Length: 299
Image 1 (tube, one colour):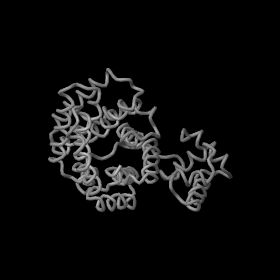
Image 2 (cartoon, rainbow, N blue to C red):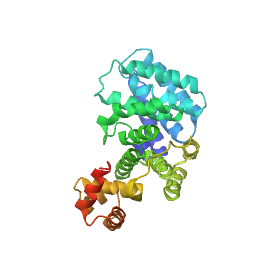
Image 3 (spheres, helix red, strand yellow):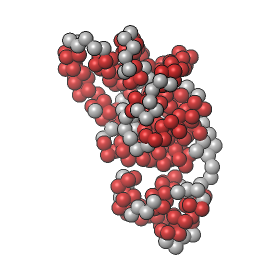
Image 4 (cartoon, rainbow, N blue to C red):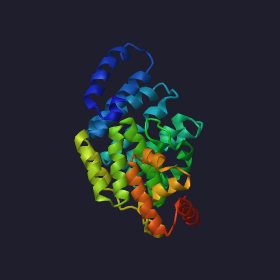
């Protein structure tokens, strides 16, 4: 949890304490997970070679005994390799992940974690078709946290599929979850991706500020340096992505207070968005706005 909060010093201190226990155990899983956490700290902070070393050591330890835990460990390594420019090796490992997934229950958390990690990995390597194909596999896990916010991965998959409406909805949901739970490390990347998706310099600036606070400048640069986003469809009525998200929740019968809690906004801001929605859609009330959303496939 310290890693997810971006409390690197606390995380490393806790790992040192855990190591005293882990070193006395015969089973390899705790050692491998401890290495993955250390590698995760290195990865988030841009120390990609150190991250590769930790992830590789963890993978070799698990692979040697072929336990069922391999899919909790293996997906980290190609992340580091991609940042080091070793694309062919990373893709080879993703192929190994996909092979192992064939024998796993697609309803299991291990399956969801591996597919989510692969979604980010494929996008990083420019394999957008593979990333987009992960969407249907992850859809049943929307709203869930499994060492990653599943809606973050779903947002990335939707971006790769060119569905920016759905991508904005998933990233907004993931952002709200991350803010509520204090998961600052992933929040920084979610905000940055949402700002890039919506071409919103204010949101991008917030993402960069969060990355600066956590020492994640290298990852921020990696995200902003990616290929241009696929062309998106125009949103009916000239609605912004935030207005679209509010409209979707209105269509679900949510009150302003519920929408504010869901999107981590003030009720006054929600009311302002709703006023803009009614004006842009030519609606007299919430019910008419919901009808507009259903008619245009926005609900």
